[in-house]
Each structure stands twice: as C-alpha cells, then as structure tokens.
Amino acid sequence: MITIKTNHGDISVELFDDKAPISCENFRQYINDKHFDGTIFHRVIPNFMIQGGGMDENMNAKPNRDPIKNEADNGEKNVRGTLAMARTGVVDSATSQFFINLNNNDFLNHGGRDFGYAVFGKVSDGMAVVDKIAAVVTGNKGGHQDVPLDTVTIVEVTIDD
Image (cartoon, rainbow, N blue to C red; front, side, top):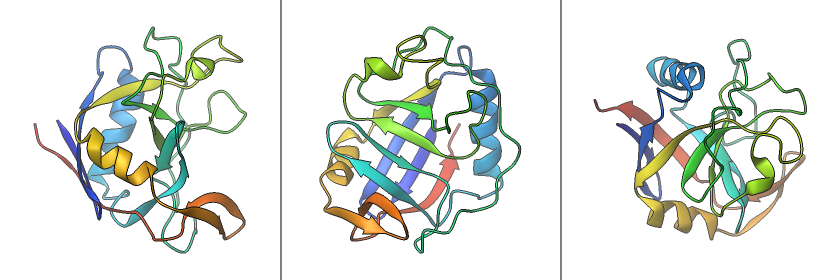
C-alpha cells in the first residue's frame, strides 16, 4: 500500500503491479528517491482529475529520470479513483507526474483518442480527500492554468507494505 500524505489529508493507493509493472516500479522508485516530498498538485480540474508529482510550490519542475514505456494497453480504464501516468503528446513520455481521475474519463483510455494514459493504481481510501482537493479554487500561476490558489502540497509519499 502507498500513502500520499497531503496538507488536505491522506490518500491510500493500491498499485496494479500485475497490469502496469513498469509504471508501478517507476512510481516506487520516485517514492524511494523522496522525489514527491514537497511537490504539489499543480493542476486541478473539477469533474476531470487532479495532477501532481512534478512541480514545487513555485511551479518549478523537479528533475526527472528517463521517460518510461506507456502501458495504457493493459486493459485498465481511467475510471473514478484510478491513478494514471501523465505524459506529453509523445506516447512514451511519462516520468514522475501522475493524476487521479475524478470521473470515468473514457476518452483517456487506450484507443479512445490516441494510445491513451496508463492506469497503474487506484485509491483504496481517501477519495474524500481527493474530492476536497478537487474543490479548491484555481487560477493561473507561473504560466500554468488550473493551479490551486492555495497550494495543495504532497508532504510525502510512503510505501507501507
């Protein structure tokens, strides 16, 4: 079990090692490296998703390891409460950023509009915290849109198993 400790409360996560082994190993390595500690949920879009894991409170990107292979064809769907790897328009570009789906986002699934976004886990406890984060007021900051005006900090992420 993984715990994402935020300044809004804790989110417990179960990883899908059997379906997304590359993404799960990547996520655990970033946890072990303490990469997520002090990052923020920098993109919050109600009824869509909350995204974090790559920027500090000043909207500076943290250094990442090399991108990983996209596992969006693993049969898992971007449904409410699942975690998926964020990426650019390049299929195999995911590094440290991830998002938590607030709704069933079928258009993000493999083959929905493109290769898709790899689902690698789900929230097992703490959706109330996710929904609380989803309700924060957002605006523009550091050249980015949908940024919480009051910082939503990932204090630390731990592996509890």
